[in-house]
Length: 337
Image (tube, rainbow, N blue to C red; front, side, top):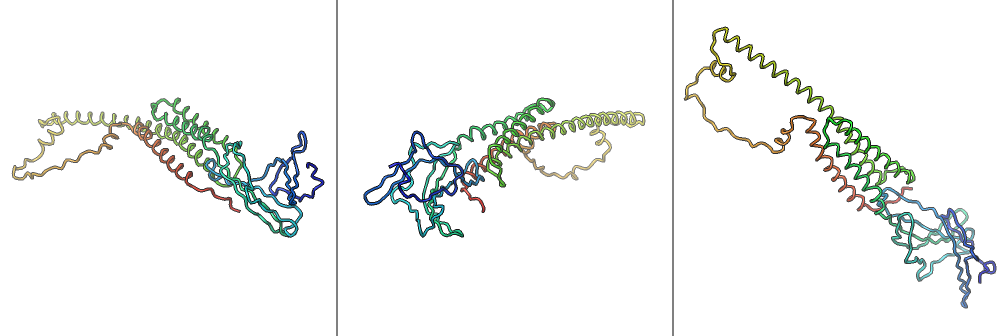
């Protein structure tokens, strides 16, 4: 039977429906079967767009649970009661393919009876658990952001005097990260809390911006090194002139003293008897390898670049360990009502 008007039907509706439509090509997609025991089977094909409240704090490492509520619009529970079929009430095809990068992780059914000012109504609830496919976001978000951050570190290997190259590299990577972050935000609804993707993109932007600030510090240090080098040259020149002047004064005064400051000090000192000499052992301290490695670089600007080559990747690696271990082990929360 396909004439639904000949059989009484309850006023069933979907409580969280937003858009719905029936299929009528070529004929209305419905049928009615009446069994000898009085059981009536009513089947109809409908397409629904339902509201689903999602909590995106773990996006894109999240799992979402959406619900479908089936109830009567006007008949109260004293007149009409909905019950689940005992065997296989919810049936899902095995070859189901979902758009939007989701996989169906599981499903279930339960009751959702509600009480309102007009009475108590029977309700059936279907729970659908969706797991987001992470591979799409790894290829389109995480890997490009990591590559952009790594490219910003290339400025540490360039000469600090190559101002156009380092500034252009820093500004370009910063603009690339800002564009990526803006595209991510445009594809998501605005929420009042921080998402996992916001933490990742924000930290990546911070690393790129820090690389640009690092060159500002290197440029300041290089100018300080240049000023310090000029002062050292002037100081050496003044000491040399003072030594020459002191040597000429000693020669005019008749003091036959050596020009060597060490010999001059020894000639003017009092002789000590051998018994007054205190013999003691001088402890030899082994120099630290790290301090020797740092002292090999004469200028502070070079030290900052060499330090940044190790510090930035090390901190970014620690952030990756914390990020993935934290968000992959965190359970999906629920929105606060």
